[in-house]
Image 1: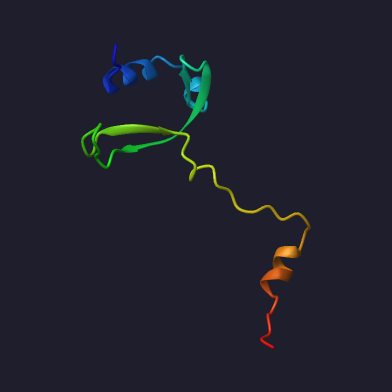
Image 2: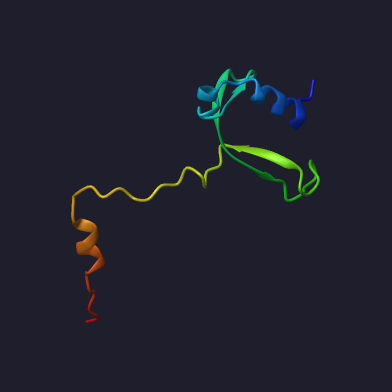
Length: 87
C-alpha cells in the first residue's frame, strides 16, 4: 500500500492534542530503526519525482549542524576582539 497525504491527514486527525505536540518519528521496518522527521518540503524534480511533489525529509545533514560550543566562558568575546598583526 502506498499511503496518500489524504490518508496521512486522516490519521493525524485521530491523534490527541498531546500526541500532536510530540516530535514526528518514522519507523523503517527493514532496518528496524526510528528516524526523526526534520521538515517537509517540495521536491525540486529529479528522475524519481516530479517538481513540487510534497516530500518529508529525514537525515538531512544540514539540519543537524550546530554552532560551535564555547568550552570556556568568555573565550568567544576574547577571540572576536583578537587582532592579528602583519610582520
